[in-house]
Image (cartoon, rainbow, N blue to C red; front, side):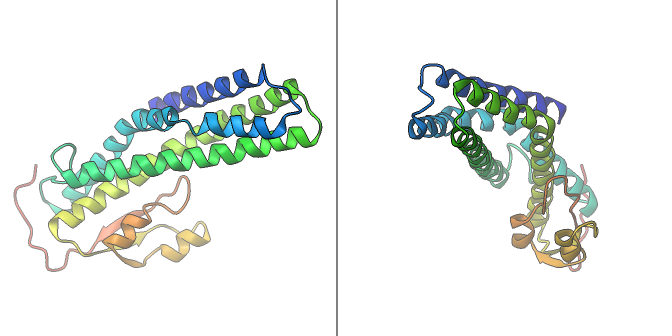
Length: 224
């Protein structure tokens, strides 16, 4: 997680630099062009590719750990693993795609709000750069930790679900505590694997885990 946070920090610093560099030659009274340019920068393909690149190893590791722990719980060999399982590879790819879009959309919304506020107040390029610096400084304080912990936890839970599915588990009991309403409502519920896969966590820093229903499953002895 620490390494992932360092990579995310470098990612957001690079976006911040790209945005600030774009304002130097742009008149501050061209509000529409400023917003268009900001969105163009943030939604560039290279940023989604970079997020996928720096996130792949942490997510693959989380998925593998989740599958391994699930296999130990069931007393079976790990089958939902990278790169042996095509389903596991597909899960990682889908996860990375969703992550890239989610991070992009949040950053676009934040930057649009920041730019709009500055322009509404009649701010110039100096004020605009200062507001964006403030925004991205804030990312260092909270967003790096939220993204890294949430995505690794999600991958861990998805790895467990994949392993359960491989051996024929049909349902899981949700263990989620009662700290907040979403967790309390889910805690103790019996979910299908599809339901669990669609909801690996309920919020950042969620501690959701699964208890598999093993009734009817034969115990295997080929534990690795």
